[in-house]
Image (cartoon, rainbow, N blue to C red; front, side):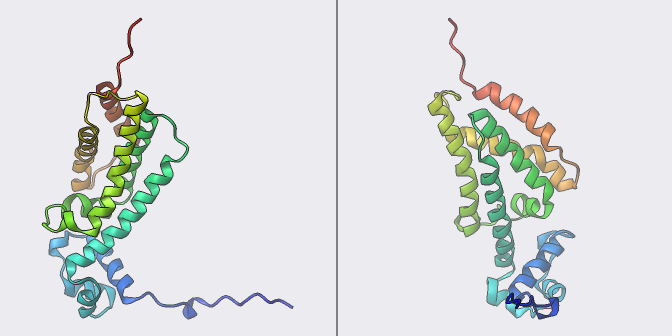
Length: 209
């Protein structure tokens, strides 16, 4: 006798909650227009969910934006961490970190636009849960740099946090024109050019015999 439970049909599966529908609707709309031009009525109409639920679940439209961004960021940080596994050496770790960042920004332009263009100028960003997730990502780079200083791969007369800010700022400036204009990005080429400049600047000098 077959004791396996019969799988429910598609029609029997639970329907997405209003919260999920609203988040998906905002993602779809962000792929078409700027956040400032999207109204709560439009989100409600696109999602098929009552507009009042935006305020019930998220507080307001910006709260919904942060909820969408948080999901992206959690996936982003998870992918970065996973990609670092098994990589040895400071240079290789930094190269992989930089490549993964550019690749992720390139693959999901909605995510990129939200993070780079929409939320940072808002006063509440640096006290938000979103920023706490971003810090997980930036702290990973700081850890790579600090370990590189301990092993002698990176000059110890430099400040680790300053290196981190320069690297993160450099990545964003490299990709921002393509993000704004929906242009092409080449993670391999950009990573190679950036690392060539970066490593020559922070690499510890070998002592001459």
